[in-house]
Length: 549
Ligand SMILES: Nc1ncnc2c1ncn2[C@@H]1O[C@H](COP(=O)(O)OP(=O)(O)OP(=O)(O)O)[C@@H](O)[C@H]1O
Ligand SMILES: [Mg+2]
Image 1 (cartoon, rainbow, N blue to C red):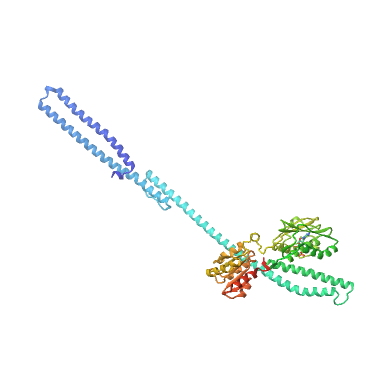
Image 2 (image 1 turned 180 degrees about the horizontal axis):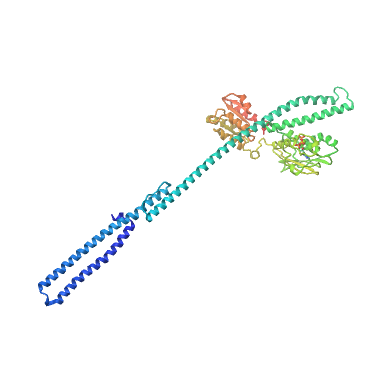
């Protein structure tokens, strides 16, 4: 029973016990003193007390002492019982509420804020329980508010996420639509321009025949008039060709034809063509080919010529007095070529320099407006320079003149990716997307002896990601794939400017060339095909020309 008492009760028993011991000692001492005192009295009485009387007194004293001891034991027992009961009572009144409070606090700590204690006591414990209940009320209230705030925040986060997802979807849809619009615009421009070029060809052709007096003699005024028709038709033809080229570049249909040519001869021929136009404006056209200019370039001659023509004709157009000079030189030990066109013309304001390479942008000032033009020459020039793997920059000062500098590689690699150009990672690598391992084994065994490296992809998405990363020589693609079909992979590759130029060859049992053509496939082989057919197809898609964005 003692072990179940509270610490307060145990302390109380200990102190009470210690208090009883001196009491018992005092009583025992008093009793023994009383006995001794009686014996002394009998001794002093001596002869006056008869022996019987002395025996009687002694017996009486012994009896009284014995009673006193009994009384003492009884008092001790009663006191002990009283102490024990008092301790039990104290234990009940001190310890129980403390235990209850402790249990309730544990509940609170575990997050059960509904825990409350009941008491009708008016003492300190009653006050303690009341404080505890108030604290629990406040905690429960704070917890509830926290939960409401959390729920509110979660709701807001969900709402925001949904809004963002919606905005993303809309953006994606808008981007898709814009891409589609650009493609349609490109198609439209290309078609329209072809429709314009055909009649223009007739106008120009007949104007030339008339001008050359094939249909008979012309007097001076007639000859001059026909000459103007011819000149304007030529300008119109050039403009339409530029529009077609720009549309081709923007829709990824521009092709590069790489050939070996002499840059010196190219410069000479273009200068000879343009010199008469400079003479009519009384402008001097200077030309210099530096000694370090490589003897041959391996690039697209037509595009380099176009770039030169556009820059020189701008200088001619925007220079009224002074001179225009063309300088072509080697750079980086002949690995690159610099083309500089410098003029003493009207110049370009610094704030306009950034926009002149954008389509349809013209520096809108009274001095440039009369010069005419559609504002696409430099935009196309920049795109062509990009295709040639080079850079273009401009320095200009108003009323002083301009300098346009183009730097292109002397040897143009087929891959547009600069890394691939130097390391040629993708040069002979084929990314093969097929879910059939046996087919992939066969492709590896067929192509590796022919000098190709095959990277196998059983997953379409991984194949697309890889193509983006390494710009392989080509991608071979199965149509029937488990996750997503080959058509959607083909579309993704062909719609992305980064991967558009990578040739894709379909290797499938499905015979649907029309669909393949529609999505821009570069080669189509139906299974089973021979080793030679496959290698021939791979070589064919990279021969001579390659599609670029
Ligand atoms: N050499 C130059 N000197 C001064 N301004 C120039 C020069 N070259 C280009 N510009 C400015 O940049 C603008 C854009 O040139 P861009 O060749 O694209 O168009 P354009 O010559 O006006 O028209 P287009 O080339 O289509 O006939 C020009 O309108 C002109 O304002
Ligand atoms: Mg121009």
